[in-house]
Image 1 (cartoon, one colour):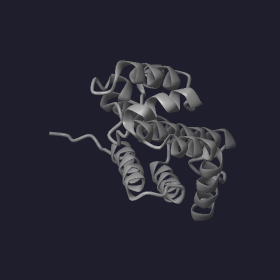
Image 2 (cartoon, rainbow, N blue to C red):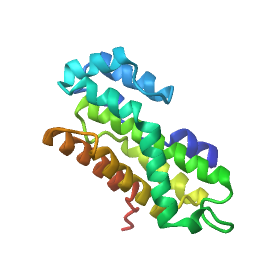
Image 3 (cartoon, rainbow, N blue to C red):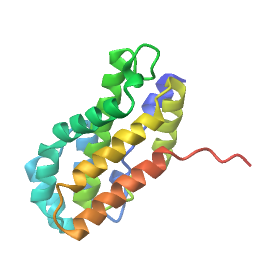
Length: 185
């Protein structure tokens, strides 16, 4: 079951958005499969289509590690028990996996901003991710704190109200999807 959840867990859904140009979807699919930031050429291409400032995307990508590290430090001050013996992010391998996930979430949010598509997730893939997190005991409360702090820090990097709204909407969408609970009828 665990292997199936891991294989099905997918955050990004933009590669399946037929309203995006095919070449943009291909760029996103490849970059996401490789779990990497967009190249300068890819940024230029996508931003030419979306009319988003390519410099903003380059800036956000260049600061990704620093921003995630700041969010990490904030969470550790807020909830130090998470990384102590018995905490949800103990031992350190669990904590490192959490920070990798935060970086990956940030990476796909930057894709969403580049495409000007704040509703960027894959519904089925997010369902599998939520099930995976429940199965392995990921502390969603801590992840929420880290992602909300990452949003605050990232908003300090944008200049225009339009960019700020796009960024806020993208983080809001991710948090909403991450925190959905199954509705039982």
